[in-house]
Length: 247
Image (cartoon, rainbow, N blue to C red):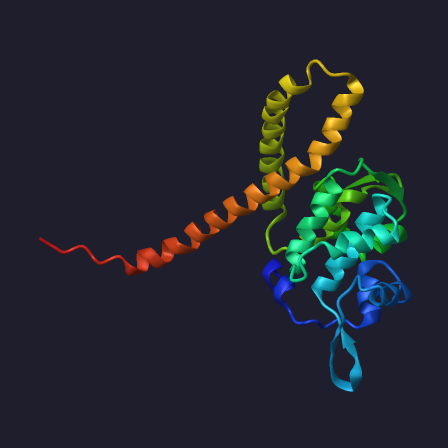
């Protein structure tokens, strides 16, 4: 089982065929994107074989999400060209989450073969059960109702070495607090739009949503880093603390 940290720090090990299979695309598409400069070049190993890593997978996922948003290839090229060149796979995954967050809900009914193709891997019965528990997949007879926007995230969580109970508890915490944040933010903006026409309100919402999501993600990342630093620092401070003197 691969941890999240290992996933983002491992050396490139995928061949172009393996990369295409993991990304749910074709080798021809990967090569086309490479010639367009949308993907960084692979690491050339023994026998002149190119090796790809998590950054390439994350970029392919971001490109796919931008296509779902209706962007043309030229627009995607401009979009990716504006990103910092040193973005890690982790940063790209977060960036894709932001892009997906203002897409309309996309629930599709798929058969098992198509579900596994979209997931980029074979799924065991236990995997399906976990995806159902996370509300990423729903059973519909012999088919599956799939939230396309959450599928890749759900599939990644299958490899995170924590219990299903912990994942569900984390999901509940995030839902509870995100709803509270959404309610309070709506109160802040309500006064700004109370006298405007319905179309103006929808337009303002469409412009504000990605900005608010990006702000929430940034604030959450910073808060989480601070929590982790404090968490990791506690054992060090305990080890350094002098023993109390008797008497």
